[in-house]
Length: 210
Image (cartoon, rainbow, N blue to C red):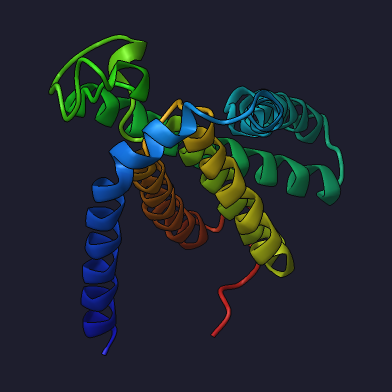
């Protein structure tokens, strides 16, 4: 039954991706006509997808916690360290996979739509780093990482992540399919990493619900 469910989910994801690809050009052209106020609002929202906002605090927290636990601090510091390591790892691993895929696919960004569209394959540079979306990837990776620690916040965290991903299309930084791919990479890498952390007993993650 689980295999059938996984197969159905993969088919559904493929259909969504194909539909998104079909609308990529239309949405990218529409984004060019947005009023300055809307653009400015989503320009601020999109900042929530910057990975350094999560990697730097969690990295500092993990380092500080490690020092404190080495000095004999209590269980609270150990738990804090474990959680910082989990958050840092979830965002970093997902981001590394996304950055590698950007080079492989080499897709030009929407600002190059008039002259180039599709996949460039093995291209370097920001102009050829549209697929998958890094901001969308980071938004969903941090949402899933925090949701693993505080399951009650899963829905609002994912809603915020979806808004951040949508902002990338609105401001013309990515195509719709780029954002879906970024989110998909985040889901796969974070859930696999979560399973591995639980198996090792790391990250202070609560038990998986039955």
